[in-house]
Length: 225
Ligand code: DX5
Ligand code: ZN
Image 1 (cartoon, rainbow, N blue to C red):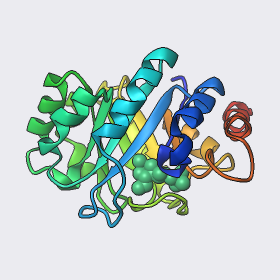
Image 2: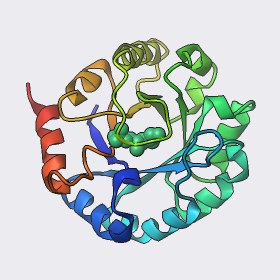
Image 3: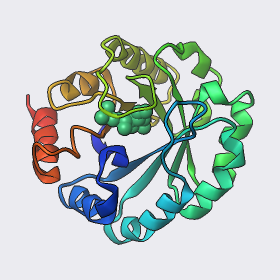
Image 4: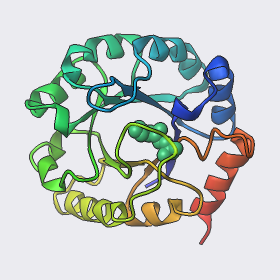
């Protein structure tokens, strides 16, 4: 599967958001990952549909996929607003959805691609019944809420086990995304385990190097034999 980089704008400079998204796209990022936090499901509060709406024209111009990660309680209440704002992928947490199949159907009816995700301590068995209905499964490799945390090492084996389960069920087309603590020095291991969409925030938007340099470092690490 081709590997896609999904810079998380959580670590971007919000005063220069459009410019930073353009720089990421110019360096080869195909997705932009939008972290939505409600101050309830996770302790942090971030952005809502207005940010997705602001990014939509740039995404259209540069052929970017807006990948929206909803770390919010009762996501079904806000799905229409995010879909209308222009989200391409809407990912919900299994921990927030008692009627997950209905929620996934709702996302499809709204014209977006459904994704599901789970916290590090939530077992893969919670995905067993929903797997055939989703386009993307996001494996959280940190506890959601903040950028800049360290990768939880057991996530690699979880990704590998998920890829084996998808393959065994004939669901090879389902994307596995990984999110949290991914850097050039561990990206190779998650790709080898079976992840094909790579989220990175603090390793792409930081003061140490330019966005282009940071993305180039990821690309080198991924393609190294
Ligand atoms: C964590 C978010 C992540 C986060 C990743 O709750 O879902 O997308 O921004 O940031 P880094 O790459 O810095 O761990
Ligand atoms: Zn995220």
